[in-house]
Image 1 (tube, rainbow, N blue to C red):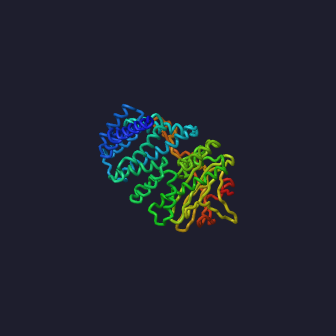
Image 2 (image 1 turned 120 degrees about the horizontal axis):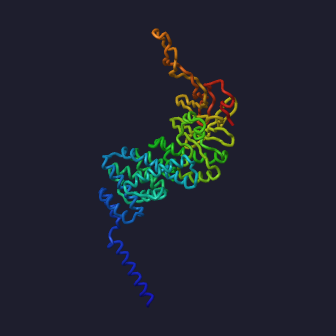
Length: 456
């Protein structure tokens, strides 16, 4: 009988504690804060959260909710009322914090160069100091990342924002994007649904995690999709990342073309327009872990990417510097029908899939969608002579009849000087999907062989 009595006593104790926690204990302090936030009583929520953090400065949930409460309170105080205005204010900070999260990971494993590391430390400390002014203290970027992850999880699950005003909906969309970034697939899908009702949410797609790309690819199968260019851009980014993995196998010593040009001639670098410089294309969970593996073999591994979207074609450009071959390499792709295909450039009976140059990148210059012509150019530095006015002392500038002698004075004279200028020469091709046929050439005809385009 005794064992049965013990089991009964245990069952009664369990029942008592269950009833106590469910019905008698009442709300936890965090739950009370969430109720205040849902009632839009931000002043009370801020005060309570600061009280909780005074008692326990390690309370990460309280820090996360305090960040939300401070943001929401600030929007109210500054009279922000619309989705678009709230997002325009938030977006630069979202981009900054995403970059800091990835730079922190690179810094931890020692793969930021000295210049980038110094910039990262300045930016991360500045961001965390701004949060500290509002009562949100963090030890380092890892704690800040965990704080943001908690905020996204709590916000999506517990804050009643989806049916609120436009600012509530903005913050809800941001929290969905963040939750997707941290690995929650359902949040990405819900953001896609929200964006179909409010196109202003579309820019947040860029923050979503790896699973989100599957939803976008399905969306692009619909010719009447509402998302157009942003969906194309993100799907292209995903496909480019797969292509880059292959390129690193072929060119294990590849580095950023733009960074290398900056070291040799900044003017040349400024002509190379890209969307993703050096390691920025890798700030994505689809490829970041693979990039870390690549960095183990090549600590300066990098590549520059440009995405050009047009009605009848989409052109993707990859630029990098091949240390082993001591040359710049350029590759161009077409994105059509959800596929990324290397462009074949046909000229005088031969076909090129990539271009090489020893001094600068062969770069995309323009695309004429009316006649489907693509222009690619190569830049080079040329010496030119200019003239500037300078003061020069002339001892015989004036003659004094009284003194019967010359008196000096200053003349303004044109003095020659030499400066660097950039010239370019290019080739025009007729582009039909992934085939480009040579049309004509323009530019400096007195190039040396090393200045001209070189193919494989």
